[in-house]
Length: 518
Image (cartoon, rainbow, N blue to C red; front, side):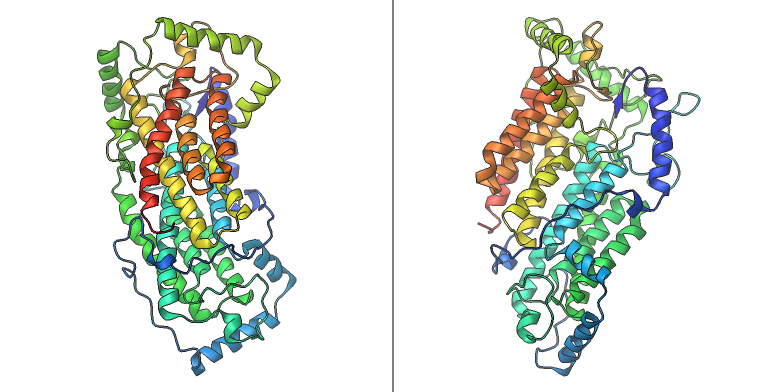
């Protein structure tokens, strides 16, 4: 996505890197996990089964079996089997238990960010200067599917969050409906390797998370199916060996998570993403319509020129909460050559000439280009840190990821609708002789995606973690400023993007306020 006049040569390097990255074993090339101590939950949310789901229409839409009674021989035999497995644990088993902890949703979000980074590699030009797009019907053919650019990544994070949240609401419903006691209460001699919770054990929330996560990301990253299967099986084994669950808890959780993920994926199949990357005739018609309206148009600056910008119809993808994209579309940007434009252009030229060390650091830290988790991934890391800080249980953790990523995706959809409606040229194109310190993305300028994504994410995190409002608002502003320091956006791009992201997030917050969690 980051380009400049030396793009062709740099893309050859990226191409070779992509081949190495995706053909090697996944575990070998993903970053190591971040250490955190398993913790006792600040609240178990025993009414969580009454919360309103995002996509599912009925909390029992996916059925699970009635569990064996706590005093039955079937259940007692399961406990005995679990104790036998625990007694033969190895050191490696103990490390795996600590890795997954008692809130595995943190690990699955981490895996999601790592896969987004792994596949965030732009398809390079062919030797003849043409371009070939990744083919979802043949993901293993180079260029590999998907290209996990920010719009694609935002959508993947959102579907993962929604599936996890809806599945865990259903899990909490069944937990308290069937009321199978926590395993340590059924048998105090079962060795516990993790902090205990009074939450009923059937179905296993960890198994629900593993199954839902595996299903969603196997669809989003089809070349990683085997890796995701291995991680899901490892997670479920840790649930048994930790002394938190017996096998039937895990089987029921797996069934529930898979069932709900499949329903959520039905939405994904028809949300419009398949048509987001348009053919050249449609892309040209969008460009010409903007020129007719405003007298300007963005033109790709790559060498060789990429014939179509990034996902022109992402702005037509189905939103989660925003009912009308036109209502949140910012006003017309300044006319090129106007006094407001000249003021913004002069600021960029002055920064490029006199950039400070701090400005350069901020631009680079927020650049989120190739082989990174993308701007949405940046905010998922912030969310994860706060989940750990406030010791959220899996259900409440899922709520954070669901609403934040729904808002981030809606912000991206809104931003892209705006970008291709106005089709505003980038600074490198509209300011003669101008060069920033970062490469220029291959899509229109107004509004700033970083700003819009970040403002939406910060608004959700401020709502959920009010004590963190000052910090997350500062981060959102810094993200917006970073694009100005990098020479990628005008100030009016960033300021309008911040306002746009906040407006989008307000719709998500309204939905969250009505879900019963508060």
